Length: 244
Image (cartoon, rainbow, N blue to C red):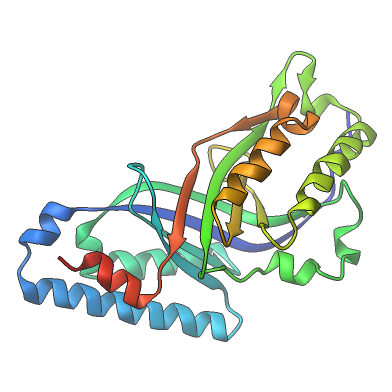
């Protein structure tokens, strides 16, 4: 049996996509809308406090297209803490106006194909990342193919390592333009990995993903789920979004 790659795990992460019930929001009494925005402000304060204390990170993004309106992105040390975040959110007045659109649960991981992640001087920052809230985000789930001769999991580790090294070289070309967080979800969600990208301009998402399509890892073995792209929002941006 081929040898699995060694991985090191970090924070648990949930991508919580919501759609705004605009009809309900527009017809709600002004007092209810005010309470909802006050609840949102209180949540952001709590999430920021957790980040300041090193207990996680968060971000809120407005999503382009029709798949969702908002992404609430949370990193926490444990699944239990993510559940607490979810419960607190769903108990607010704001949640009455938001509908679940998509969600993904995974755990940040560093793989050992291109070296020992435990010896990586940047490992801590990569395992316990801070959300980039001042730019754009791209999220998508993915699998490694298991079909006939293109079965990733039946390849020798040396061959997988060779291909992942080449794959990583492409990513290095975009250093400073794209920041990537890989999270594993085998046995946790419907796909095997979640990929979260941050960039100051969404054109960088298109460029890096297109170039990687020509790499053997993606061309032969990559299977990709839906893509969600959005822009970071602070409290002022969120209030502007909900105003009419």
